Image (cartoon, rainbow, N blue to C red; front, side, top):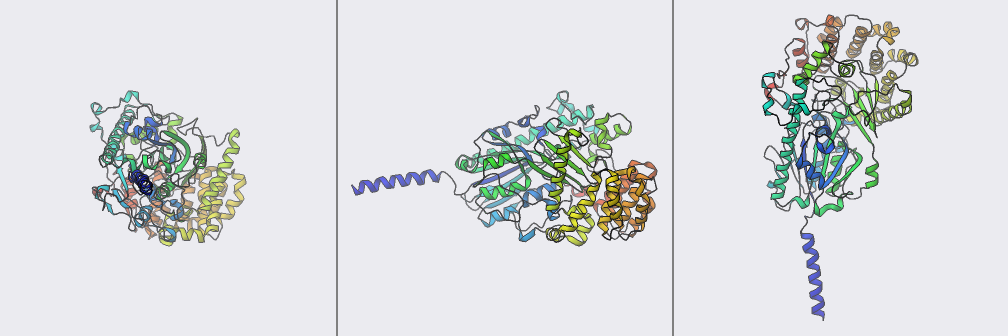
Length: 630
């Protein structure tokens, strides 16, 4: 009897062991990223021409996230956010491309480094483009990196693979290269965004991009096929997502949904279903952001999420489906992209989108050399200059409101600003207040100009921000005077123009420029700042006077460019020069008369444009020799 019982126990024990042996001790994770890709090009998200069977099959066996968001609409900032789980403006890596690298706070590391410490084999194939100190993150990072090279077949792995097939550069063709016979997608079937003109070139560009998405899907299928060959599908979470939005004009580089709202599908493997709060084939409306992706992978792997990260896991042990489904908020930010300077913040809350344009006098369409290589961009601007666009299509090239509110369910292209509609006043104030709270709580380092960030703050950006929370909060308040009626803001603006804090003076002038001619009564006060001790205050004063009174800004621009020893100050000054020249040809700068003592890639790009050496369809940027998609 004892032998019989012992035999029974052994059979039972071996059965348990055998069942568990079918699963790895820890799950694997694979990330597949398609560059410059928003939800607007996938049938899975309602775009009829976005036929992606491999991605759709992945969704049928996993979870589709209806509301996944990049925090920034450009590669290096978005990718660094993914790797760190941190908001870029809090740490100081919000500028693309970096002038100086930031350091993660509190000894923090990129999340794959924590996986390596826990015994995972980490590989990247192969794009990096980080704006922070990298450290030891990858066991292998190259065009040949693969999980297949891990030490043993039982070593858990994290593999990240990026396809460039949908990158913006795939639409950098010349007119002579247009070939309708090469298209799979019929241009006549295209549904254009409301803000784009209906031209053969735009239809061809759309169709070509849809074809790129088909190629992306084939790449996804290839990666999944390799995992299947290796018998790894039952133990591997597969994330497919866009690395940020894009890439038709007014998407990449902008905080509209087309620039931030990305597809996200997560395949949940058979042996690890218990780590996903949804069953296969489900969709969730809960909002997730790029800051959440790293913490999610750590949680799946059973690795503690460090307190230095801003994100929250949405898969793994301890996650609450109800809490995730209830998430309804996403924060977005846009600063410098290559040589184009701007400061924009956005808050998606449920169906509403609030956008704060801190330099609202700059149009969205301000020259960016890399953007305008695309023929569709240049055609759009040419049509605007010839008066061939309607009001909605013209918005891109005109000054923006300081704040805007959109109902993105009723108005998916974000062209009908509800900010002045009394019916939505309460929503506007709620979202305005919430965004103010977010940028103050970070605190947001973009309330200092990039030159100050580079010269005085980095690499320890997060620490500096915490030490100067009160000053940043004050600067936010000064900048936000621009969203008030001018009579209500005038007294405080006048006081701030006389402040002993140079950055308070700076933001007071910027706010006045946002008011435009309504701020003309403060012109005499601002004219006094033409001799300010800070070059960037001088610049903003010259910019304001040019906008409001028509005074020639070129003497001030030439003086600042000849005096400054900071290449970043020079780049900011030339950004203003390009804006003012394109706004009023009478302010055209003669490049031969400009003496620039400090230079960098951004300065070179602006000088190329001012010299008339940029052409649609041709990359003449300083990085041409070592071309690198941005």
